[in-house]
Image (tube, rainbow, N blue to C red; front, side, top):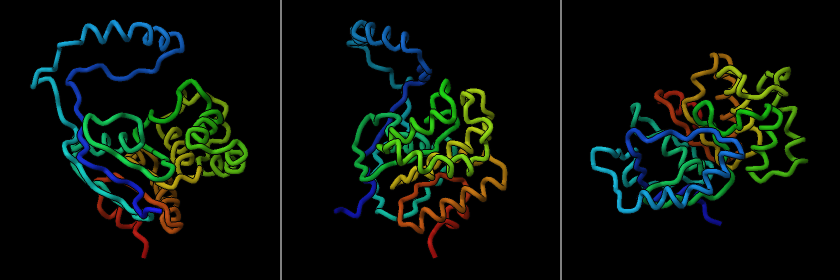
Length: 231
C-alpha cells in the first residue's frame, strides 16, 4: 500500500468572471436542466471566453501529502486555498491536472457546503455518512457522539437552512470529525464559532492527528496549524 494520501499534479482551475454561482435546485429544476443541457451546449459551440473574462484560481499546482501528515495551507484572500480544498473534496472539478486521493475524505469548508438545506440536522448526518461509504449501523454508533459534540440536540429535527452560522458550523465539524474520515479537510470556517468551540475543535483535530489520520487545514495563523503537529 502506498504511503501517499493525496497526490496533486499540475492542478489548475479557471473561472469565468461574472459567471452565475451554483444554486440549490428542486427535483423538477434538475430534470428541466437535464432536458435543456444539449441545447445550451449547442449555443456555446465556437464561443470561447475572452482573456479578460477569465481568472485562474489555481495554476500548475503540484504536491504530495503522506498518510498521517498535518499540512497547513496559508495564503492571502483570493490565493485559491478554498478552491483547492473544494477540488480535493470532489465538490468541483479541476480545469486541468489530476488529483489522486487514497482514503475517505471528511470536509468542513465554507458555511453552506456539504449539507442539503432542506434536510434536518439528523438527516444530513446520515446523508454525509452515506456519502463517505458508511453503513447505517456505523452512523447509528456515532450519532450520539456527534450530537453531544455539536451541542444542538434540540434542533436536530429542524431543517439546517434555519440554523445560524454558528449552529451550522458546530454540526458540520462534528459530522466531519466523527464519521472517521481517513483524510480531514478543514477551511477557515471555524472562525465562525466562538472561542470555546474553536478550542474544542482543535482538540478533536489533535486527537485525529495522534490517531495517524491526515489533516489539511487552511488558516491565516501559522500557530493554529503548528499547534496540531504531533510532539
